Structures are given as structure tokens and as C-alpha cells.
Length: 118
Image (cartoon, rainbow, N blue to C red; front, side):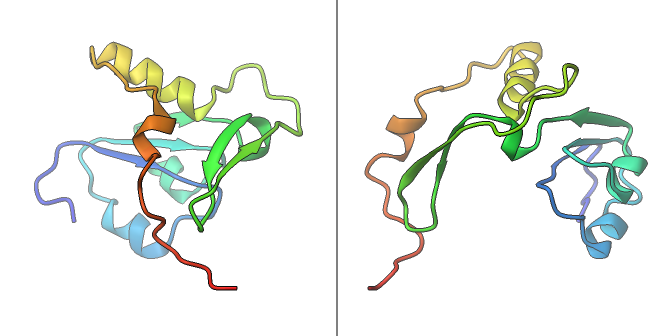
């Protein structure tokens, strides 16, 4: 629900946004979409921040069972695209915000949201 918000920021994964999401944001006064692919939502956006696909980036992710996994890029990155991290860092800089880059510290000690039983 927009609930009177003047701006919407949507970070899309690599799936197509649902019709419900597209419809619910149709009347957003100003919309920024951070995405890898063009979609109906990015076509309606006022600003599109193109980002690399997950297979074009290196880094870490947390699996469903709470284990830290690393990933290596498997395809060459398009020169003009930024990583998701670069986009967020640039936005933080423009907004004069300090990001906490200690992701390992932020997640250590947290209980996994999914438990897998063997």
C-alpha cells in the first residue's frame, strides 16, 4: 500500500514482478527500481538503477540453513552496470549515510530462520 508515500524504492530479484505488485505501485508519485532485467515495473519507473545479475558478482550469501556461502562470478560484467553493493554505497554517500560493512559481525550469533533435519 502506498499510504501517502511520495516515493517508492523497489529492489527486484531476477524474477518477473507479480501483477499485484505492478498494479499496487501504478500510482506511485515517484518510483525507483533497482533491477537486473527490464520488466513492467521498471518500464513504469521514474528512475531505473541497472545492476549486475547474481552470476556476474562475487561475494557471500546465507543459505536457508544459516551457512555462509561464497560465490564467484561466472560471466563478464557489462561495463556500465554496477553491483548491488555499489548502487547501495552510492546512494548512502549521496544521502550522507554511513553503512556498516561488517556483515559477518551482523549475522554472527543469529539463529537460522529455517532448520533442516537430517
